[in-house]
Length: 469
Image 1 (cartoon, rainbow, N blue to C red):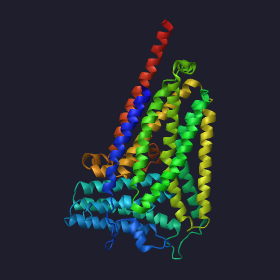
Image 2 (cartoon, helix red, strand yellow):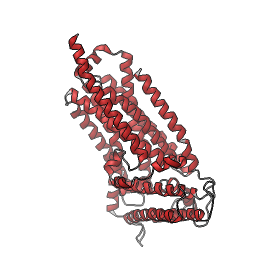
Image 3 (spheres, rainbow, N blue to C red):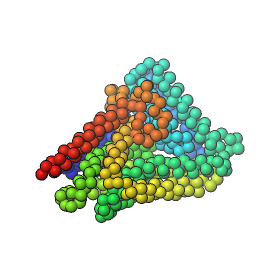
Image 4 (cartoon, rainbow, N blue to C red):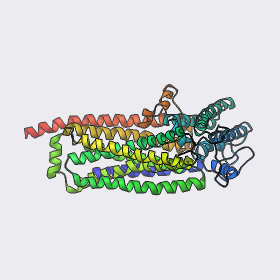
């Protein structure tokens, strides 16, 4: 029954999300993307026009200039009475500024590596706030204020990045700076560790769980899930890169990450509930002694393998695309390729070390506390995946824009919680200052707490019944 229930829930989630994921593609459709005087609808068209041979260095201030020009075109259409939708509509320049420029130009990934992930969150929220004001047909003065705020944030980041890369120097690129190489190494290393930490916490906890319960046969499924996810990540990264290169936008990547994250939520909840049910040593003894059928046991182990696959796959393709972006700029600095490669190798080594520590110290924890800690970890990660999945679909994937109305209102920044956008730790756990992410998380948190309380109350009652018998 449990296996059927989790399969049904996962299937419903996946079907609904895939159906919903079709909408952003329409919202961010580039159309003909023909270059117009003073602005370009996408980075792809701009790069093809100014750098057809692929030899020119495009600075981040140039990217900001072009985003600003695109937004000015949107303002011109808005105040000029143009319709909202269509290739000549006023909304398209505002929507394309994010998916067709900020992300595909590599601006977002570079800011995340060289400045901070929380800064990316702040900028993305400002993009969302600007689009919300446009979609809500607010006054031109209000929209102008949001546009100016966004461009100011982009300009600030562009100045930092151009100075770091030496693009502001009259002598040309500052690629010879050893400081830039070290900054690149730190950026890549940080991305590998940050993006890999979520996956390794889950995989490491499950391996320690199987070792501690003397179910080493089940470890094959977990490792196989991780290895298959790595292979799938490479394939998906190639597909997404090809799509982004041809279509000029990054929306499919966000949809893929969002769907995977939300599917992982259902599986993590299932695994968490299963583990909490084994928190009593007696329960686990019965489980091993054959009170549960072999088919049910196999189903549980397969669930662990599927969890491992989703945890690794969710981050794998994104990390590969991140590293690809840094390799494209590596030739503009001294020892650039060494810095990127070194960051990848040492980052993976750090993730492997974390995995070893989880496994070594995990199996030393007494049985009952270990089950409790592992189930709580799975529950926390399910809440984190829910927040990040909703963010990737509704914010980065454009679903909030495509639906509009109250959904777009829920995707706007909560003023009283705006400070959250600058916190890297909160971002790691998928906590953002928007109702579109917080409400589902709060609901899941309440359900999880109630489930844990009921599970803990059920155990003493079961023990009393056994003693009476």
